Image 1 (cartoon, one colour):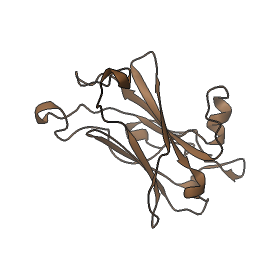
Image 2 (tube, rainbow, N blue to C red):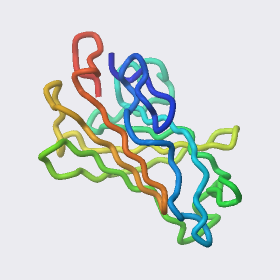
Image 3 (cartoon, rainbow, N blue to C red):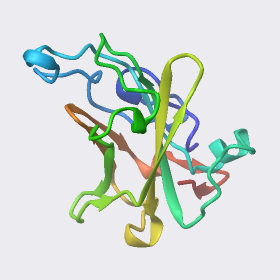
Length: 172
């Protein structure tokens, strides 16, 4: 069942297979000011364009069938005084998030668009869009690796397409 799971450190996989697996909580190795480590945070990485997610969030789900959409949810805006401003315009020169998708043996695909969404509890999420035609993923693809970087932060989540079957079809 694709798209419904997720949660835990780095979006650990949920029972329905939609959350990315892998990694440890986001933290820094000397990435903060004066070499101080950034505090750990837990995020969810989910395949936002999967049919169950689109069905559950009818009014807010991405509708671009030509793109995979992957969300990184739960980025805290204030991380020990080194938080992310509520608007990129508040801090010119701030590192922008970048993301890639990769299937083993194939070149990585860079995201074509990123949307930033803020919520009222002090966290935000990013939705990264990838051109489906540039990286066809099938149920027989072994593993799809999503990676995101923003300044000193990096995360990786792994998805297994055969675990993302919904109503008999691969749902990405």
